[in-house]
Length: 241
Image (tube, rainbow, N blue to C red; front, side):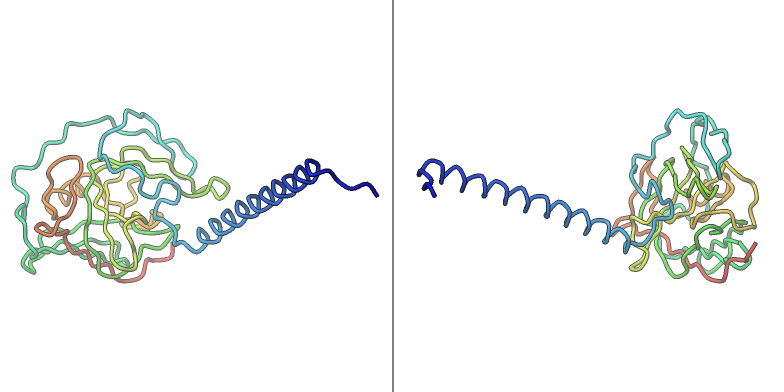
């Protein structure tokens, strides 16, 4: 058998190393991809399963049409927002709280333990609204919400959802996107109609938007140490409908 020249030997060795590198690289790509999908499968779902929380600008987007449960819905035109002149509890303070009774689909707002507002709401029908104690962490004048499943007929794409108050706690972290917000795509308040959020009549959501802390300063308002978000207590059991 003829012996390989030094040049042929080096070429063959280099080829083996290149092949090994390619094999290792491919294995790493497969492993990383597998880990990503494995981790994703263990991540708790967002209230808005497609959008989660991607836009925190609070700005209005000029779109005329949305989708709810596979049906087209008209998106309201932008209306210049004027802060109500007299809203109870405009100042910073920890003497306010919101309670949401899932069993009766009702929201109650208290200041100094006095009931100041009562509003009908629509909570989770296609995904449960979590119970517990939460705090508002950011308020948005408008945002996009999208999720559901087209094959199941639950898909929705809703631009410019108004007066959004995102809340969280140690178990329901911020990125999951649970919130109180105004609603233009249905009027069936008092009955479960959401994918986990708390739907409100737009005028009621506007009232809370300015009543709650942090004190509203524009399209986007974050809670701070000096102006913490209002407490939200959610309890009861959503009726089966």
